[in-house]
Length: 75
Image (tube, rainbow, N blue to C red; front, top):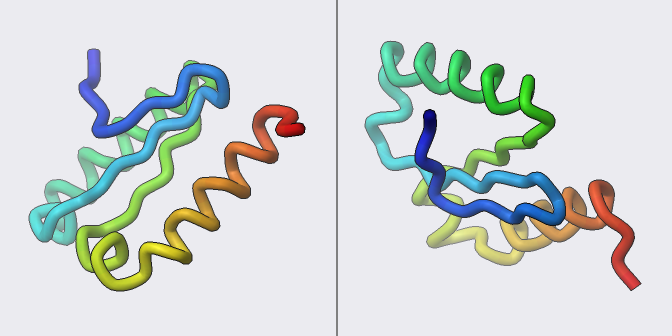
């Protein structure tokens, strides 16, 4: 039902990179509904905005790594 930016099946992890429109109230409400529906399917959606990806990539990658590590066993 939904198209996501990135999906890791093994970790059941979704990564969304949000543009400025996601700061608008109507988009935020839709994102909440969408994330709850995905969560109900056992998926975790991580959201980062464009600015974070462009200026804080190390922190973004660290957060993704920690979530993947928590959701699957990494050797």
